[in-house]
Image (tube, rainbow, N blue to C red; front, side, top):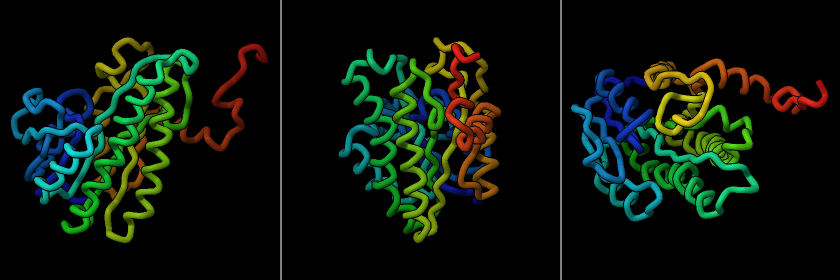
Length: 235
């Protein structure tokens, strides 16, 4: 996919990975980059066009789609997460994470797929995670939302193939953002994620594995469960 001269929409573009995606697209020569956020005033990067978008609100998504008829690339980046064990998580929090991470991705895809078709196909990018494939008890619900979004990504890829729209899933381990501020472990810089995505788009890849963590977990899916979830008592 050629990035120079395209028009793109990035959701959750006021901070973290989304902010970096928008910035990288501008630097790559995109003609226009719409930066979606609940509060457009929180989008401060020069070169982008701030737009109001709440991915949990049907009317907000539909209104933006009616306004942005020139979009050729959609990056579903908006996401939330909060540590909680599966037996302890508040169900309202669990629903909120699913509403943003899964249903938000679905809402945006449904609203913008016809626009992409009219504009030659383009691409939908869904920001996923290595936790799409690997469950951690303290991030169990977040992992469940990303597993669901991974399945959705694969299904969208099959359905949108006929209209020439590429659907790309991006997987990565911990990224150094506000979301992981309280978590320990190695973290990649947001620029590594945007670099990998732009390279993947240019190479027409369907799946972008950003770091060693995502590559190792992906490769381990065909192994016995004990390979991903070893029992310390059996050692």
